[in-house]
Image 1: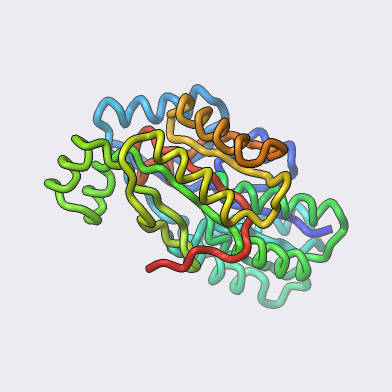
Image 2: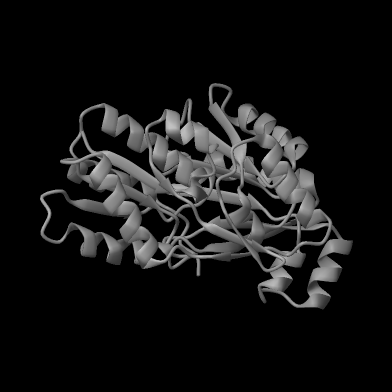
Length: 292
C-alpha cells in the first residue's frame, strides 16, 4: 500500500482527512498582515472566514515553500517507512505550490528506496477532493503507487470545474476587468461562468444575466460534458452561499435524477480569490474545455 497525501486546498475538514488516513500540508492565507495555516475543521470556521470578507477583509495567499514540502515528505516517510507516496497537489495553473512539491520530492527521494509521485490535479477545492476520493479508492484497492499516479493524472485531465462568480470585485481586484465594467456588471446582475482549462487555469467561459440563468448554465454544462450519462458523482462547492448551492443541487438532479451529490466548502485559500457567494460544480467528463 502507498501513502496518499495532499494539501489543504482539497477543502475537506481536517478531521475527515485524518479519518481517511491522508496526511496533508496546510496552505497559508493572510489577513491584515497575519499569516494563518489552513487547518479549518468545522463549518463554523469556514463561516467565520467569509464573515471577515463580508466585513471588508481582503485575504491574500502564499504558496507552500520547497523547504516546507521537504520537511513534510521526510516526516511522512519516517512515519510510514517503506511506502511510496502519491501526493495530490493544488493546480499548477493557479499556484507554484505544485512546482515546489515536485522539486522537494526529487530532493527527498534521492538515494531512498521509496518513491514520491506528485500529481498536478489541475484542480482546486472540491475538484481536488474528487481526485482525492478516487485516490483513496485506488489506495485501498491495492493499486501500486505508480499505477495510481497514472490513473489520477488521467482523472485530473478530464475533470471539469464550472463556477458561478457572484462577486465581480474579485475579477476587478485580479485585473481581469476594469472598475467601470465591475460596477456596470454588478448593476445589471451579470454572472460570469468560469471553467478550468487544460492547464488548470480558471477562466471566464460565458456571461449570463441573473442567478437563475447562471444555475441553468452549470446544469447544462454537466449535461453536455459528464462522462457518466446516468448517475454521475457531482461535487458542489460554495463560498458561503448555501441557498444558491441548494438551487444548483436541484438543477443537477433535474438533469440527472440519479446523480450522487457531494456538497462542501470552498476554503480560505481559493475563497480569497473568488470572493463571497460563488458556487461551483466539479465532475468527471471526457476532456476539459480548452480555452485561453
